Image 1 (cartoon, rainbow, N blue to C red):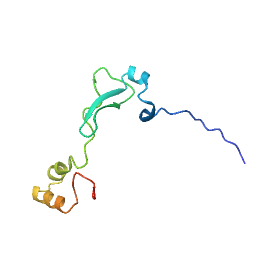
Image 2: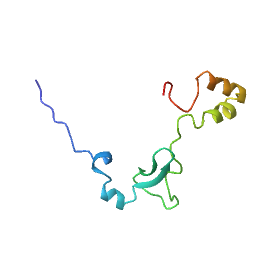
Image 3: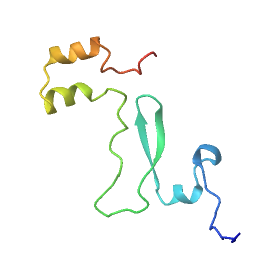
Image 4: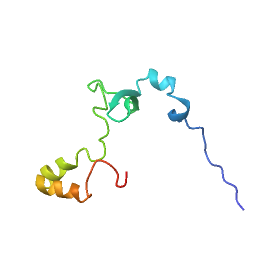
Length: 98
């Protein structure tokens, strides 16, 4: 049986160890307000451009937040069709069964 050498290193998990002080000092995190979890730091790209003040501009969408807009504006569905899809449980803002 041949032996192998694998490179390995400890990983920093901000959920367990908190935000890394060096990353804070370098502006790696941007504060963002999410409608569900409130204000929190979000990791961004590890570099900056002089013309870009922020990488993050809005929070991740909530479940179903943009569904009606996509169905009507992009796919051409009517409001009545969207209402029927919601009544049938095809679309919505909560996971089925919750």
